Image 1 (cartoon, rainbow, N blue to C red):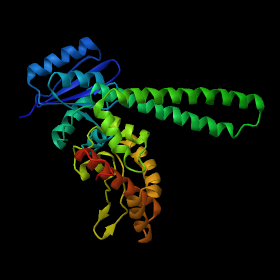
Image 2: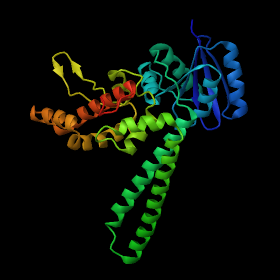
Image 3: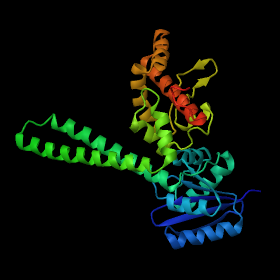
Image 4: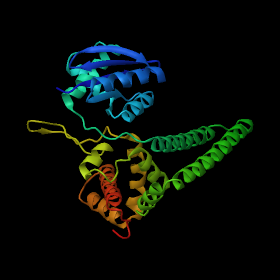
Length: 309
């Protein structure tokens, strides 16, 4: 029987639960505690280790466990809580959460995918920071439109100038980072060969979807949260929805789909055909997002640019 470990991560400690022996213990979420945990799990011959995604607090432990040769999963907290509610377990403590994580993995057997390496995580941090700066610029511009006073306007102009300088610096850092890796340079060029895909979209995909080119079209759509799911009971059929997956990737693809539906002849024709057949425009854009992701996945898989394909 497989030995499965669930780990609930907090800032200061890691609560651990081991199945099937139902053993629980905790260690510090620091180098000493993680080293002790790695030694203990390796010695026990653990098959799978699962941690909840907690905004980055889990990454040091996940990296150390992966480096030790253990199979590591980073699971979605919402799915784990839904599983707990389905079992009728409404109590919530760190020890209980660790046990629920282990039980969730034991019951559902989610696929184990390689974790992003250190370089990819750093690229993701730069891409995320750039997105935050762009959002801050947009928010300040919205506030500035509501203010009439000259003194307040001067403050907005100073801050916007500083934010735009920081955006330029981040773009330069991203360019340097991409140039350091021959693989990333080639992949960015391949992705940007598709009309509608610019540097921001390409770099978001490189940073937040390293599986691109290794999965089939259904798997990659599900990973991005673009695989539609339906609601049906008896004769009743509800509308289909998309959701879950990687929100950053989905947001980037939405912007790319808006541009591609105007300037990419293949995707424009695809969108127009859907609209002419009676599909709502929003549904058509989601379909363009899914088709665009399928194209990008095939381009990376086959190592062929848009023009040569």
